[in-house]
Image (cartoon, rainbow, N blue to C red; front, side, top):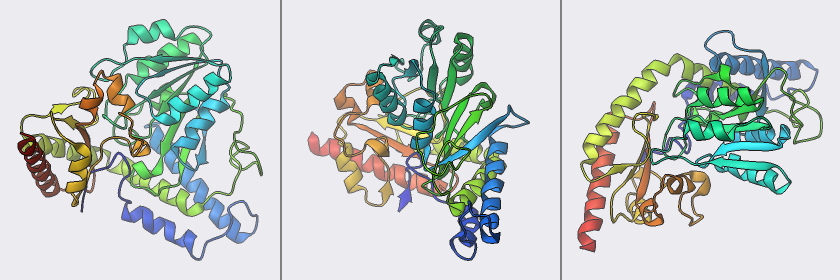
Length: 370
């Protein structure tokens, strides 16, 4: 199987898996217990926490705390609901974990403003400035879009939020370790382990000092009173090692995906349109469309390749992508779009072979339709 769905999840780094094993075996203690086994487990959690914070900031960053969660969805819910916003400004192409949570709050009486994007998938900063006014409580924006890879102007949006007296939340799940994350500009940052070659089932929310959140999970008061529940030291350890590797390999990973992107575009040939900006984009994401393509059939036929039609979170819903719709694509155009994602463990040979197979299958579909 040629795996080209890195936006859905990434292969686990062997080093991260190895770091997890002791806490699944001999060091299985509860990290909230005070005996020796508990202290060993707790130490693993804190080492991982410190390592992840160090990767968020290139130098000594602002004071804050990192809260472990079950994943990015929980982290985003904690940030959005926990900040008790009266007025929220976000973007039409955000992940459902942001849009659905903000919409739920709107149903509870909060004011919700959803900014449109242009055909490139980018927000208009002038329009954002008109929307982010005093009285806004929270501005939420995704660093790298999970479907089209477009990079939003986080620094500028954060500055608008600060000027208005609002908190700024960055969904950095797809961008963490892949592109520059202006963490210093943010008040809240959500990240996830399984997007950076770590384990599934764990994410984190970084909270700037002075930002007060209301817990969304109640119980034992773990995680500094913000997220009750027993932590999994194995998951924390895997997350920490994956974050460290990500930092160590950042330059090599970036060069690798850029080279793979150029190979992919050359190998797939003409007749394809890229959805979203090419100049403000993470290179390891290609969202492509070609007229007449039946994507569902293509994915079924190409059993040796793992690609997607968009977000794994929304697959099977039968609804056109809200991200592609926000770009102005018609439902028929959305249904001819595929997402190809690659990264650290993808080879040139895999890219060349997969693109050849995708091109041949698409050509065969068009030939049969004619």
